[in-house]
Image (cartoon, rainbow, N blue to C red; front, top):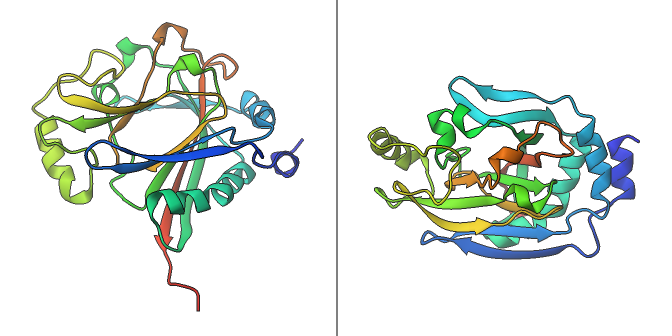
Length: 242
């Protein structure tokens, strides 16, 4: 079955539940949605057959494998979530200017991580870019945590903070493996547990890291590993309709 057909037969769940909250002292908004799809198995069948390839490089990058996700899924997710996102983040009228989506599986063992993969990070300094993270595996693979950089107090990294943050980080160290509580250079401000078919949405410039609870269970098999679908979407403000 083509995923466009699957989505037409599997609309967002009628039991879908959403809640918004804020993170840390900077009060960054976060949207959490449970039971996102009524039939997530349709999406899993696509992911299980997807051609995954390494996403990491000697310099860093995502510590695992990625594969392109169906555009029909991306479009349906954004169409469903744009209203709750506008409300949770206090946005006015917006238009989608860019959207990318991939299935992702964490695979690198802790001793193969590069330094940037062993610290909280941001995906972009653009405050208009949002991460939509859809958990598609067992909860015990771990969720996502958010952090404050102790030396600067930064919880979000914007264009005007980036140079100062990087200058101080260059003098600090790195965790021994996957990020846990962030000590001693970072402080964890929130942690969202994974749950199958759960979605979280946050701005891409918030310091965060995946919580890899059991590295010994990492697997490249999407049926066994820490599988997520990751959407990065950029919203641009538009004028009020006439």
